[in-house]
Image (cartoon, rainbow, N blue to C red; front, top):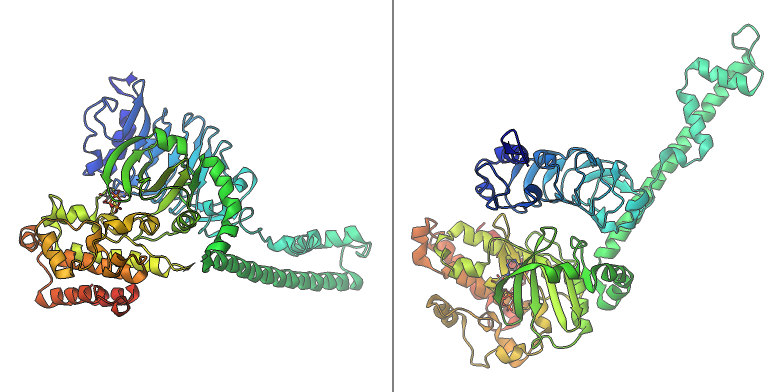
Length: 573
Ligand SMILES: Nc1ncnc2c1ncn2[C@@H]1O[C@H](COP(=O)(O)OP(=O)(O)OP(=O)(O)O)[C@@H](O)[C@H]1O
């Protein structure tokens, strides 16, 4: 373990740390022994580093030093700002590497991995380019290279992964994506011969002609016939090339149109019934892999067994259930919501259909649902874990005072964008969030606000019992109560019409958003001075309050749409 008086794995770790001298995540990387137990994000076995877990840690620089750790089995370093190339890896450099998760960084170069033991490769959302030919990873179970700059043909074993593993690249083609179009193959072999001939030197061209017929002159010069033949061949070749180019262009346009159509079809508004048909086959396959867990884009590596085995920490408990932070075997951190059996008894097809739709929501300001399970009376929803708490904790936690005016506006604007995306997502019937409140507005690693738990509450069986019957709390009184430390609870944000048993609607979402907005704008004013933020001046504050009051109009039809709310907010951004 110790070479030349130092720990063998120390140099690579320190080289990596050198790129990030002031990163909070690496503050604990001090002393000469990375396996002392105090190095956060480093896991050891028999005094050697076998795992590095540094997701969402605001890290920069190259990942290469970490791949010099010869005993490394798991490297998960997603959602950072790492740059540079991924070094070529093979059995001699990384004999034990099984899980490599580098997604959501700025990595570039080509992917050269020849790793017989690799099980997980997550490299999506980077700048990798080139083809996939140099990927030799026979045991891969979870794979995603979407949203890079890759091109070329997907071949062999990789074709077994779904198209979502490859989407958003420069020019990848072949199964599971549409077939590749090879310009020179479009005309078959004869055209490629023709092309070869054209590029040959005149002598070579003559050789070809003389080889195919006996029209060359005896003295080595060109006879009239051979010149004519040469010209004819030249013209013939030129025509062939033109035809070949025309066919290639036509094929290209056709494929593009076909691709666009496919995309349109998947993006278009689908009724639940249509959605069912489209999804059935795909999901069955994923279900068997996930052991009862339906996986969505980005959650392909999830397994129910590993979720159930994961070490978990309770994040909180709400009306609809409890939420846990779970660290999976491969170091991936997720938030798991376990729905309450009281609110969600039995199986419901409508709920299943909704979850499948919610699993397709992908937006910068919406927390991604990666998978869900609805079997044996257990309902688990698996979301990305967002590390920076919720708006609820910012407003009412111990550090609420540090939320300055600019941060408040950014959070509200982000949440409004997320909610507008949900409201305008192509679905029939249109999506409704049904539980907009500060604890469902979470902050990601960059502090951006993301709306969580879209639509779940709409399927709760006994939720109406927790809404007070009219006369209910108008916005002003509600805010007073919140300001006095009474807390909002769930029903404090619910629109008045819901108290009579009506189902949540986009209008009731707007009402709840208005309540959140009023709370954020008016909350903890005394703290502003201390926090150094101040508000945006009386006029601007009044502008925001006005938006809040419009959203919280008593009559649902008088409330603006989220798109209008966004436009009004935009005036102050
Ligand atoms: N994806 C996530 N990442 C990080 N924290 C989360 C995540 N989802 C929820 N939380 C936090 O976990 C806690 C409990 O959330 P939970 O949704 O179970 O309850 P709630 O939002 O208070 O009530 P409700 O049941 O009405 O949704 C909240 O503080 C919430 O902010």
